[in-house]
Image 1 (cartoon, rainbow, N blue to C red):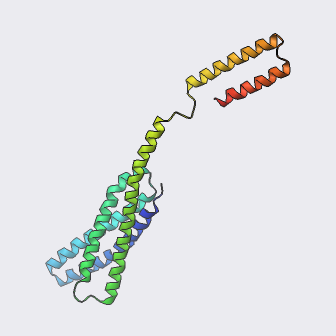
Image 2 (image 1 turned 45 degrees about the horizontal axis):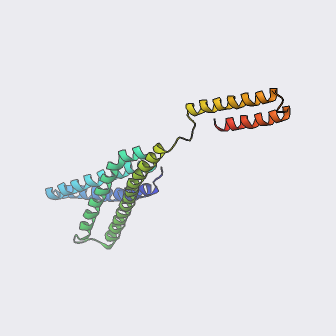
Image 3 (image 1 turned 90 degrees about the vertical axis):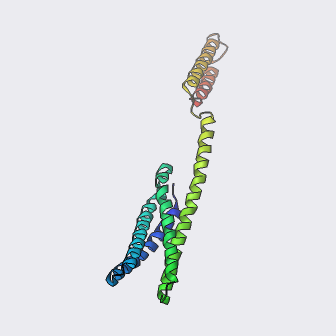
Length: 200
């Protein structure tokens, strides 16, 4: 089952997190040079969250063509990716309000926020659709289970064979008594054989 929204959303979020991960790593290295412990710890936590989100988004890409059970197994990872993506977006918004942010950084951050939000929305749409699909699958399975089987059962085949042999015996008797000509006998026998084969 194909899920193009999950594929597109996970790719967008992966690109956004990848770029922001580089920025977060650079910030962490910069803060390490300054030696301010509080900034180092915060930058390390942000970098870890971004890298975790990046890995979750990459794993989510693989869910786009999984069957129902495979998708269910990855559902927790997709939800975690979406949550972490939103956490990163909140951090990016906080960064935008920081003092001394240049216009170029503002544009870059809005681009990254857009990628993450768009990716999350697409993945959430597929998650909600999938829930409906599972409900439909149950309905279809129940309906199919209750419907009569299209393939004839052994019992039906045996009954059809018994009816066929009885009809052949009757027309054989009619032919022997001279009631049916050879031509009539052949024509009726062909129709009986055709009818019998259709029931198999």
